[in-house]
Image (cartoon, rainbow, N blue to C red; front, side):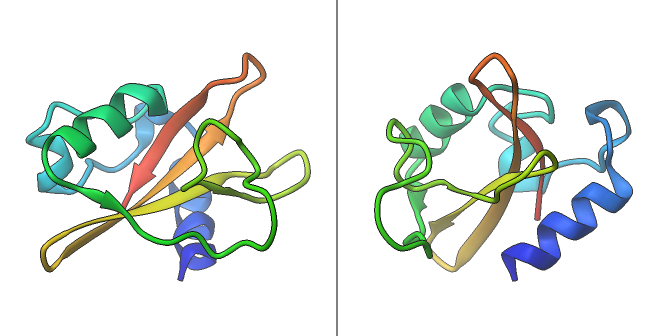
Length: 107
């Protein structure tokens, strides 16, 4: 499912300016595409969201964010799921050259 989300986001949202709106639970927290993952993660955790278990083997691709999984290659994106009760959101992020993860979109 993550691969489908990532493919869809890359196909319809190559830049943050043209990205579809975030799901209502994320938008209500003031989150928006293009944001750095650190404040996104903090806001989600402060409002009771928990990260879904990762689906990679071995060490996490980004040690400071063990919940995040990343693809490989020059077009790689990273993803993570969060759950709050029956609600689940999946985030797709761009691993920027400056070492930050930028939010591309969510579903």
